[in-house]
Every structure is written in structure tokens, then in C-alpha cells.
Length: 59
Image 1 (tube, one colour):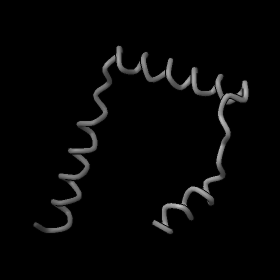
Image 2 (tube, one colour):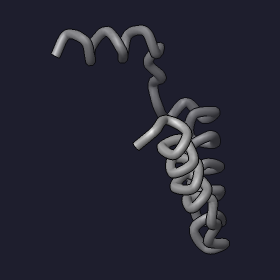
Image 3 (cartoon, rainbow, N blue to C red):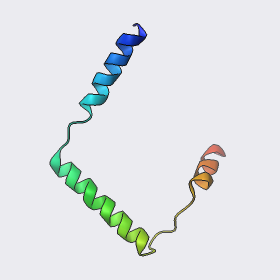
Image 4 (tube, one colour):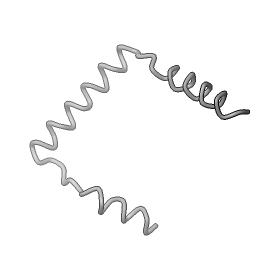
């Protein structure tokens, strides 16, 4: 398939993912708020991205 047609197909597939379910959107927003609150309260120890990526590379 020529690159232009593959790009058009990829765009169509990506656009099809944009359909928003309000219940799911609400649940994700609640989860995000809960995680931010937990981080702000110090309930989690955050790990710098470079350490996480290095650990993945070492697997």
C-alpha cells in the first residue's frame, strides 16, 4: 500500500479512538485527581524517569 494511503488509514484509525465515553472520562478524571492527591500527601515515592528507563534497559 502506498505511503499516502497508509497515512490516511492510520489517521482514520487514530480518529476512531477519539470517541469519548462520558462515564469512562469521569472515572479517569477521578483517578487522576486521586493520584495527584496521593502524591501531594506523600503517600508515594516518585522515581525519576531516567532511573525507570535505565532499569528497563537493564532487563
